[in-house]
Length: 244
Image 1 (cartoon, one colour):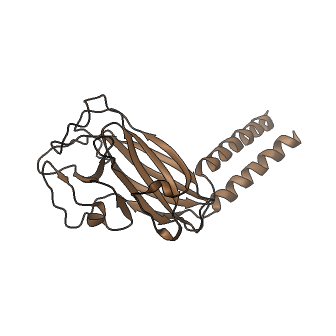
Image 2 (cartoon, rainbow, N blue to C red):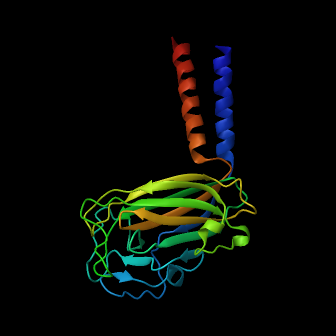
Image 3 (cartoon, rainbow, N blue to C red):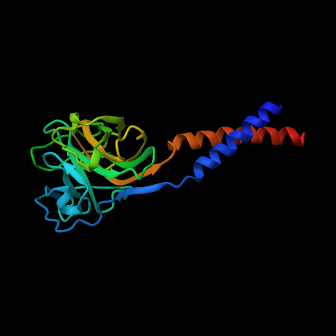
């Protein structure tokens, strides 16, 4: 019993200590405030993301900005998660890439959150998806980019620190069905804290991204949650035993 109580106490203290470390928000973007937006047709702009929203974005080909509630009424967003604007990219017709470069604020881990949905365009060479069939898969990689210098046309020349795959859901072609994505990447191999997140849609034809939140932390977020959960179970067990 002493060992059990001791282990629980250590876990509680460790979890609380980890959670006490400051989490730094290093980037946040919901794409609600484009500057100089010009819609080409059917509620879509092919202006670069940098032109509309500023640094620190990089892209290849045409990463579109979608006017969810645009004048043509192309799109439907029953949940309202997307707000008025989101960005979109292709998987197959062109290898659209999207990247965000930032300083990890001298923390060891990067926590990444965003929303992902299948969607399609009217025109622009489409259709790119099929009704209720196309499931988006998005590769997300954290790259070491010393000095904040990144060449999106040669991503393979940068060391990969961590990576994962985001998967969405199939939906009607012009209806958003958002799923919240989260990754907890290890950035300890970074040269100077300057890193880049690279997003590459690998399946699904076309998909939309929105509501980015990137945080830096001293711990991977799941570890703290697991520690607190396990400690709570142990502590709860002791309390029940003491009442009996």
